[in-house]
Image (tube, rainbow over all chains, first blue to last red; front, side):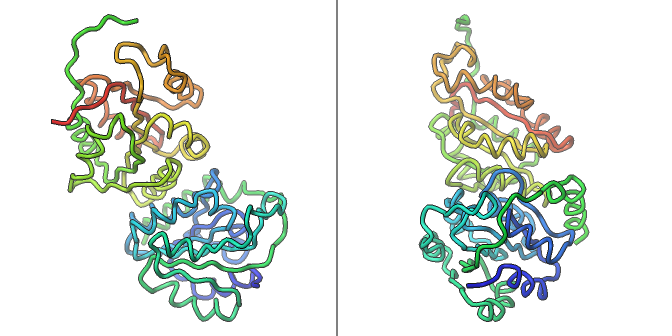
Amino acid sequence: MIDRKQAWAALARHIMDEIVVATYSSATDWIATVDRPLNYFAFGAMGLASSHALGLALARPDKRVLVLDGDGSLLMNLGTLVTIGAVAPKNFTHIVGHNGSYEANGGHPIPNRQTDFAGIARSSGIAKAQRIDQLADFERAIPGLLKDEGPLFVDLMIEQGELGPRSYKDMYSRTRREAFRQALQAG
Amino acid sequence: MQADTPQAPLQGASIIAAVKQAGVDYILSVPDLHTSNGLLKPIAQDKELTLIRTCKEDETLGLAAGLSYGNKRALILIQWTGFLYAMNAIRAMACDQSMPMCMMIGLLGKEPDVPSRQSARFGVRVVEPILDVMGIAYHRISEDADAALIAPAIEQAYAQSKPIAFLIERRPVHA
């Protein structure tokens, strides 16, 4: 099992001009790790981070789009894997923090902690899907996750982090959204 | 009950032309029987539009949001049941964040000559009041001339970063 903060720290060491779409607990840990204009925080309706990211990936095929999702979030929009599998954006990498917990909502378990998300992704048409449960393996995988032809999917087995409540006010602010828009337009 | 006055049939081609005129690049859709033959099937064959078929309607809101940041325009083509299903995503993107969510909503089951607010179908009857409560502007698309409302409304939605809805009251026909 992997500490998500350590995983994101490892990822941050490789991040350049990629768009990073993060949600809920993955987002709070990511923004604490690296706060940058090309971070995009999927707002409001839980589960839609990968849908936002798919739109960004289609609109900006010149940029790698990385989704930092959660297992509880993905379960609220599981059909997204079928959509992504069909659209098959080459610049799309989907990393799902899998701790079997609705961490941001009090730590309640997801309905089935044993869910094989990589298996679901593969059967949805995302051939390059893998489960990673060791930090060293994730560190080795990162360069490929940022440059290999997508769509790519990682079921990242992580420990449960800090429980909510969390504040998302700054994350979802108009200021951040405008900064993202400007950064995207700049390059 | 309104008088049954002759109307020019609503042509799917007129709607599609208006959507293109507004610079829409992507159609994001879950199929709706009401718009299936007149809109979705010809759109699927149209080389100037990219159709993304999603599994559920709320996906389309996320997709449209992401596309808009990359300066790509999208039309969400769904049925009123999907509109109701996607309510939380609409609340978030269209209302809280005031993003240019352009929704074309098929009113399957609406009686042709009855205003939707007076429909015998509960789901059809509540669409306009819900849009009112959410502060989302809308146009009723009932006859062919109404297609002229579409392009300016989409342009305005993107210019002002506001949502817009088009209620497809009659089943569009496909020549």
